[in-house]
Amino acid sequence: MLDKIKGKLIVSCQALENEPLYGSHIMRKMAKAAKEGGAVAIRANGYNDIVAIKEETGLPVIGLIKKDYNNCDVYITPTVNEIDELILANCEIIAMDATNRCHPDNMSLEEKLNRIHKAGLLAMADISTYEEALYAQSIGFDLVSTTLSGYTPYSPQLEGPDIELVKRLVSNLDIPVIAEGRITTIDELKEIKNLNPFSIVIGSAITRPQLITKKFADIYNV
Image (cartoon, rainbow, N blue to C red; front, side):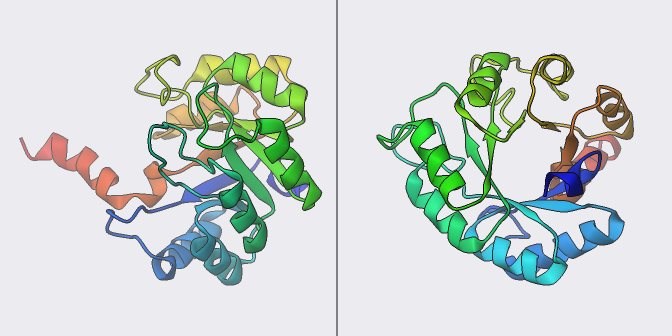
């Protein structure tokens, strides 16, 4: 699995319930378009989307489930219930929040990680800081992704990608580093690529047309 994504582009195809493209019948076509454009894997949210995307494209999927729990900021695969659902969805990699924040269940990251590995799947740690990535590596995560940098109150609040975090992780971690988060231009992609991460994920810049349109409209409609 890791050989398939090394040095290649992964596209995140996600739409939440309040977004125009919500629905697995749409996301499967979005993923097909991403595949035709050169994506080698898809990051997808939810059982139905994952199953539909795998059926449509045959590509490997990094699966997650976004779910809100009361009194908890963690929402990317936050409990073992979502892990079990993702195992049933047959995705190759399960992504989960591995930040240093309150999780809504009483299971440790290690216990959740063991559950994923017991099912024969790889586990990706979505982190926001260098220290969180080190901890994720120490307990046995297979990959780390910079997904949540800028989305925790204690990580750098940047407009663009966290280039320094990617650079530091690539230089010091022994497990694959996936660069993800606010990569919106070709120049940013080139700058990240030069840091030699294991792979790069692009999401909103490709698959959220309402945000792409807004960038142009904000300049033109003045």
